[in-house]
Length: 176
Image (tube, rainbow, N blue to C red; front, side, top):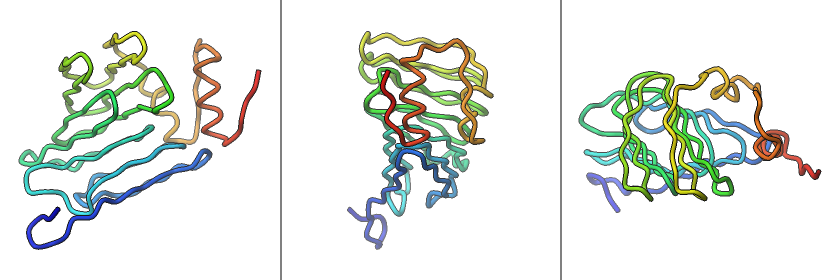
């Protein structure tokens, strides 16, 4: 696979449980990768597209370029943006995958339902892989993005949702 005259290599950034990582993609997009997450991307984007694959959770501040859409693929959702900031959460072992928009505008494709949704700031789309349903609602950005500031906020969440987050965050195994 080549772009121009340069050989394109797939790059991988990965965090173990308990770790987080901030870095910049070749186009200038800033990524903050949450614990237990992995992102794959080319060392050089093509002339027409910027595409990455995410397993887990990451916050993106996409470098604006109207001529080169930025696409984040997960197993169940695909997010397309031109320049904006948002959070994508799609851990392979969890039922829900979500996209939360902070600024700008994004289009989210729920792959299994072949459904496109446009998000506005402070809105989140969540797809449940088990029930094959989705929700689209306004959310508290402070709660959704608290992990970026080394804080976890739980508000009336079931223990079954909290435990996997704590296990990743602290790299521990919790048994009840």
